[in-house]
Image (tube, rainbow, N blue to C red; front, side, top):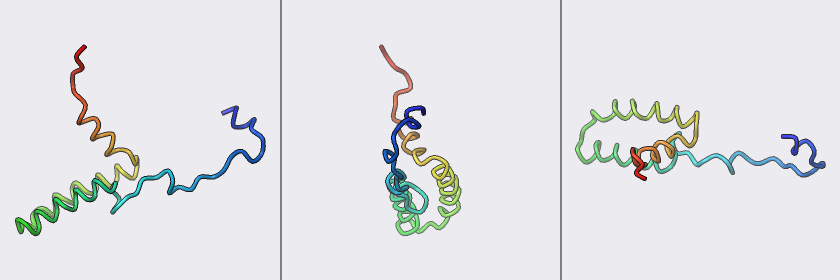
Length: 89
């Protein structure tokens, strides 16, 4: 923090938000939104089951809220799922 205060004038610049925030589609990261859309279309068009819509809404709303709070939530959660539960020496 002290280094920032001691730097001469003109060494800092503003960074546009689009450079640091991920690309969101419908409030979710692009990969998650595409997978979500494919699953919805499979059930609606392939199986002709409109009963999937309440489940989709129950999943979509919390995911959108968690992504709004932390943009890397889904990436960290997926990494957590992939890591082994026990580490062997």
